[in-house]
Image 1 (cartoon, rainbow, N blue to C red):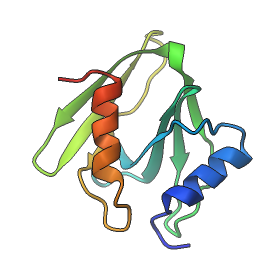
Image 2: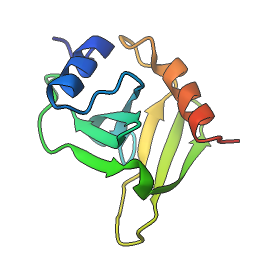
Image 3: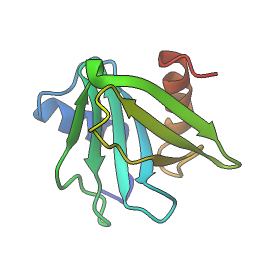
Image 4: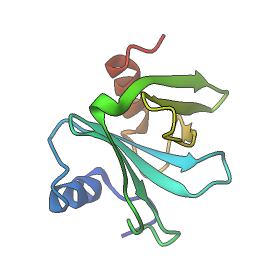
Length: 125
């Protein structure tokens, strides 16, 4: 397994953890900014999940989960070669860090298509 997990690797992990529903939007990101740690962001009918990725390319650490009804709105700010994804929770006490999402990820060809799905699902202008 290389640094970038394939979509099948990620869906296998989700399935093994009972959070796979066959309607996933999966994007690679960095937490905070371009120098932050990698995470895979997953949106599905069960909610929003962040899967922490080690430098060796493994999913390890605490999975952050936010149920669908806990999200108030999603903001996607377009940058030159990337996007800044900001999730707003209904509960103001829940702090969610922003995510830096590259428009393209070498080794994960679905990245651009998955970003379009986020824009469509959350009706982002």
